[in-house]
Structures are given as structure tokens and as C-alpha cells.
Figure (cartoon, helix red, strand yellow):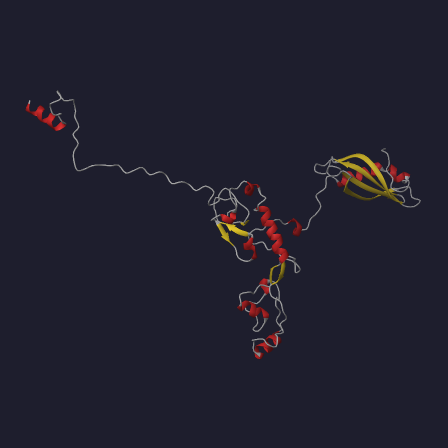
Length: 308
């Protein structure tokens, strides 16, 4: 019998010797041939001992079959309590479970997926604030104010899918919709800052591409400006050959696709040929017989051959 591993007290002798009973129970619960050698025991309580056996099943490295046996007071018969498969100190375990909200990464969402946001999301803040009770100097008539008070409408009655298509008249939501500002929440300063940090890390001045660029995006003709405070530091790249095409880039970013990096020179145009079509230049076929004679041209030679 292998050496016993005690937890807090000496194991019961009959329970400690019931290795065959524990092994038979483990082999009955496990698949054939996966119960290995006895690797120790643990005292669970008075006359209660758990025997451990090596697990040879593939994929369960370091796991052990645990068979717990017990004996009643003044009884000489050891009985089986339970059999389970437990991980050992060096067992191969699955990684710790992480909530989906922490596992989600950019690009994980697909068509039809919905990503809920917490009610107290630090990246967002109310798009418009104020109570439904209109001020005394409100331009809305008293009739409209009474109607709004009777309807008791809230600014954000629920999720976007549950909000009414047309807000109640005289409410803050109605005024916001008229001004084109009907968004329950907008980007907060914190949300703006973390977005800017994320974009600057991906397409900023410290990237290897920007370090080797001939110039920054601030002077590139492919940069599309953006409005708001982000326009002071970011724009959108519109160069299809750039690695940042369609992405928000820092004005300090740059790449080899800069519009003024290397202007392609125009191909040299040869001078037009000079052709004089007002006269015919004679082309001698053979040298003249003497210096005093006129050179014979092709037409004259043909005529002489005809006479001969």
C-alpha cells in the first residue's frame, strides 16, 4: 500500500486498507483501462477516507479518481460513499472563466449581434438634461405644458427599440428631436479621450509607419477633415493605397502614400518632326560620271532604260 497522506488525524485502519473496494468503485464509474495506480489517501473525518487513483484518460493529465469510503461506529464493514474525478495539484485545467464583457474585443461583432451598454457607462453621458417640468418662461404654450404633464413622459423611456417613434408633444425629447439632437446619450469626455488614445495608438506619430513617413497627414491631400474637437487632432484617410484607408488617423501620422511624397514627373515629349512638303528632294541612285554632269535620279534612269 502506498504511503498515506493525512489531513488532520490518523486514518481509520479499515478504511485505509479498503483500497480494493475504492478501486473497484472507480473502475465501475470510469471507462475501461483509465484507472491507474493508487497515489494516496486523505482523511475526510472520523472513519471517512478518500482514496486517489491515477487517471490515464487522454486530456485529463494530473487528474485523479477519488473514491471515498466510510465505516459506521463499531462496524467492521467498510462501505462506499462516492466516486468522482478531481483535479490534482498539477492537473491540466481550463482557463479561468472571464465574463463576455471582458472577453469582447474590437472586431468580434458580426451581422445581427447586439452589444448592450451599461446604464452608467463612463464613455457616455446624457444627450440632453433637464426635467420635464418646463420653466416659467418656456416658449411652449400652457396647453402644451399641461398636456406634457398629463402624459408624464420621460426623456428615455426604455431601450431604443422600445422608445416611441414620435415623442410626446411638449417634452424635452420632442424639443430635442426638433433640433436634431434626440440622442439619449452622447460621448462623454472620458469616452472621447479613450477613443482618441486608441486611435493614436493604432495610427499615431509613434507607429513605425509614421516614423518612416516623408511627411505627416496634416499636409496630405488625401486627409478628410472631421468636425468637432476631434478635428484638431484627427482626420480620415481617403487614400486607397494607404494602410490607413478609411481609418481615423492622427494628424501626426504619415505613410508613404502622402500626396506630396513623390510627385511623378511628366514623361519628356519629343519635338515634333520638321517635314518640308513644298519641294521634292532628289535622291541619287549612283554617283555622277563626272563632276560636270547632273546626277541621274530614279525617274531619269527609268526613262533611259525604256529608250534602250
